[in-house]
Image 1 (cartoon, rainbow, N blue to C red):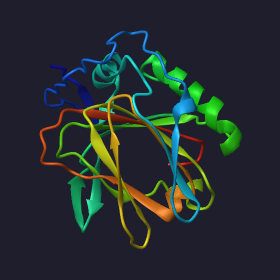
Image 2 (image 1 turned 45 degrees about the vertical axis):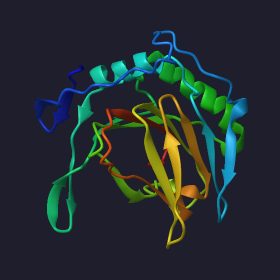
Image 3 (image 1 turned 90 degrees about the vertical axis):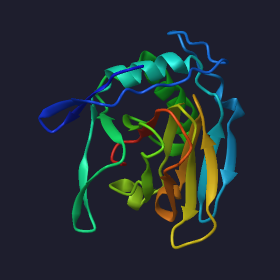
Image 4 (image 1 turned 90 degrees about the horizontal axis):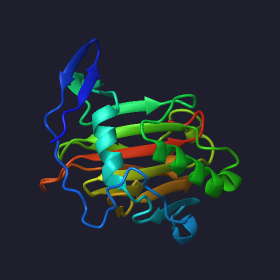
Length: 224
């Protein structure tokens, strides 16, 4: 059981005790390593969007997840929805270009992503946004990362998932059939091309008993 501190305004509160069942296939070692990105599978979507996927890319993920739950200064946020001030159903943290990431393997992850995708993207991934989904009640609604340049130009958002499996749903903006991508422990998914402005994505709530999941989202400068 892991207790995590959350920064919410000027107060400090404890998150409910979070538990995660380690994978019997994971190395559980601090010197986690990465598989080659040569096995990435690309799914071509409509309107110039695409998604790359690689299951189990990061090994030693149990150690990374424990570090993220324990050491990241998670914060709770509130937002105005339907004329009410409500809790955001997940915890958040943002690491800028100059910030040291909370686990050294995440630096290696970003370097590997840049070696693979910077020639295609034309710029590196520099920031790391993080979301903590504490259980099945935490979620993120339909949206695209269109605050900043993502609203006008092609870009990429690379997500590495740690913890209990959840499904990332994607659907075309304006309506259409939705797609569902499972995200498990150490999995990678990259949304590219026009994906942020022509498609939307979400992590729905689930009634299934699930443990904590941390999503680490690598983005270029000016995309959020």
